[in-house]
Length: 146
Image: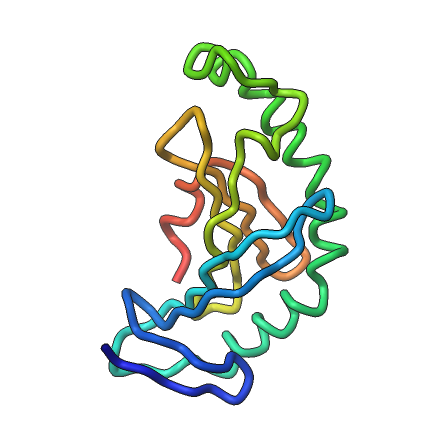
């Protein structure tokens, strides 16, 4: 196992990118322990761009959650037929009972995404942040990020 200390990110372990776990308060004041992942190869270190993105994420976490809660409700509302067909006993009125955040991924280009599991699909949901542009959609939107 390969370990690294980074002055911004703290102690990291390499496992398909540099990772650590962090307790974060997200939507509706709910606490989650999420994997923080820095996208890079084993012989690479987190870049200044990724460190800056992490600091921005931490600094703007509450406003980010406040601004995306409506998008998440809209996303679930638009998928309610599919959700109901896959999970009969769930309520689409509470998206955070069926969307479970698991990871924050920091790309080399400075974008980052909160990646979530869902109770209705293996694809999951991602909240992709690229500067001031925020997209909530199925996780396929991450395919072309670097």
